Length: 284
Image (cartoon, rainbow, N blue to C red):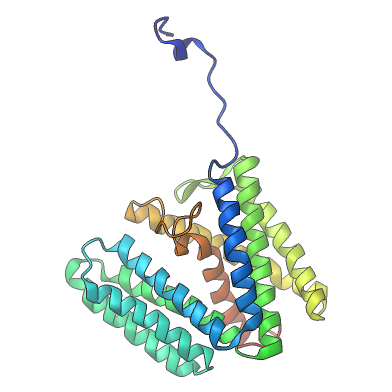
């Protein structure tokens, strides 16, 4: 029953607000980060490798910080060292060396975390961050082909991530996976997949490939990006945090910003080995 002494109780129920109050901050952050990222992708070489290594160190640090509040300094050192070393080795196409380094680092993270319980979280997080970042470093190694392959990957992921966010925030609709995030919707999934495929076709055309092949490969790439986003949302729910960090206004941490790219990069790495024709551009 409405309480006449409570002015809010006599009004009609409010409709849920659509949109994102952090939208303007997200846009401003993108305007700053996008030119830097694009410039380094084009530049390639050691500059790109160092850029990815720095991002991987930040991601590894954030994973330890949110998953292990009692972590000693050595836990951060193991995680960041594993990620940076993996990227630098993979960027030189020392793939076996990178794999061995990451495996050793992930096992060391597990051994360090195990006495504090849930060592598998350290094992998974360190390996996931280091492998995803290392694939990016390897994909960009070849000058012309590597550039095209990374541009294709980033174009699909950015389009899928951006339009999934816009559709989910502004259109609403049925929830995709409420256990992971109440803001992700089926409308966002459809929009992300559609625009990811369009971006893939355009990126393929720009690079001189068959746009139809680009569109077909863009579909699972976009789905991988959505899966990466959901996976990180589930991880943050498990650890009881809203954001992985605070370094990027409007986004949170580095993990919050590149969660979709991480899973898509792993898909690109797998496709490079087992997919017919490898990854577009002939990178790693």
